[in-house]
Amino acid sequence: MAAPRIVVLAGGVGGSRFVLGVRGALRARGIADTAAALTVVVNTGDDLWLSGVRLQPDVDSITYALAGVNDTERGWGREGDTERVNAEVQAWGSGWPWFTLGDLDLGTHLARTGWLRDGLTPAQVLERMAGRWPLGARLLPMTDAEVDTQVVVDGGTTMHFQEWWTRHRATLAPERFENPGMDAAVPAPGVVEAIAEADVVLVAPSNPVVSIGPILAVPGVRDALATTVAPVVGVSPIIGGRVVRGMADVCLAAIGVETSAAAVARHYGARSAGGVLDAWLLAEEDAAAAEEVAGAGIRPLVAPLWMTDAARSAALAEAALGAAGV
Image 1 (cartoon, rainbow, N blue to C red):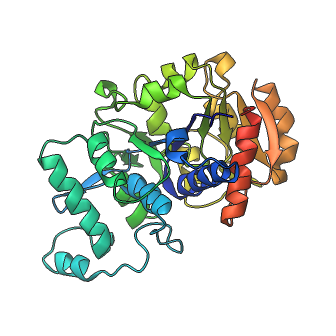
Image 2 (cartoon, rainbow, N blue to C red):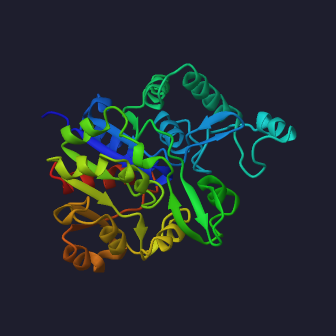
């Protein structure tokens, strides 16, 4: 049997764990060349310039996770990293004192920045980065354009998403999220083609607003999802009425969406009604919401969603693939 062609839209820690689960599910099926089967379209709305180097937090989190070198306790950065260079940079008054970069992580940013200065696109840089480790997946940025997420907080002050998220821990009430330049952006090479040729498209249990939202906002991505023959299956980032990690509830409230599995499903919408989903995986704790999801034109499926270890992450991914019939 040929390996299914899988596209995952992902960002953040939840996205990293889910992508690992998809790769694990493919390996459990006996598929050795998972890189030929699995394409991950990664959010780049979190990206920023800092101290003259280009940071891509979601790209790096997923890359490090697939390479097995990520810091699983913090959820970001490299395992066993040190912060000597970061301390020296901040001693010079550069960077952000509340935004820590590990030395190994800085090595990644320096390499990326050098390649960008040499004229490579972000997609070409990511392809070069992926050659260092056997990731078992093809990674694509959502776009080559710089569309960094800005947060307009109560009172009209605008700041980069990373400042709002890391420095202020999402305590400043957001009025809205913006991605300047998004209207002129286009999907990175390979993104639309991967969606068109997929056997299934999976929406990872990532932050719906600032991880999945920017991917869907890239002009052309929604059209690709609307026209692909592949079923689109989403996994709820809400379990038992609560976010699993981070401050996604604050983000959802800012766009008028309740923190519930059914509300997030409605936010994405049914493909049959101009949205993006055909099916939606709900946690066992939210099984009572299945009828509400079905009423929105989205096929509900109930499964264990906690990704507490590799086996559970693979089981969740297998359930998502099963929901698509692949």
